[in-house]
Image (tube, rainbow, N blue to C red; front, side):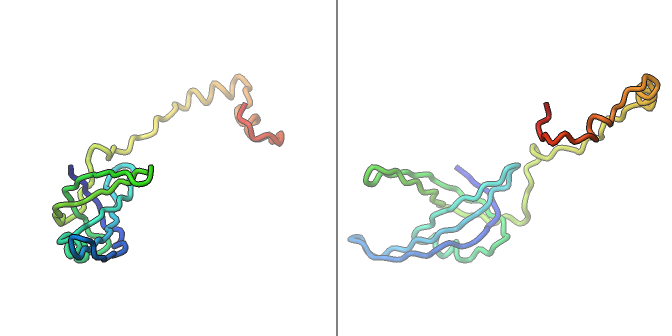
Length: 136
């Protein structure tokens, strides 16, 4: 699976020793480049820690990731683990979400004239305040 985003910040670095030896874990927070951006915490282990520490906020990266969940004491925990990073030269906007600005439809002046001729008070309803915020 692949995720692309802009580096927001470098999270905490955790180090420790287990039965298998020393380990290091670094969090890297990115913001996806979508219509509705989301922040995602990538959990980097081992050699990926050094790579994550080289990124600076604002850089756009692409990461090959694996998503893994595990259960502990009846609760589930999910990690997004990158196994490969690529540095993007320039942020690429997803073209499918960019829509051209549409011109507002205009109402012909003839329609306004017909309201005035029939003595329909168009704005009186909206200008009066009866103390009620409800639209109905």
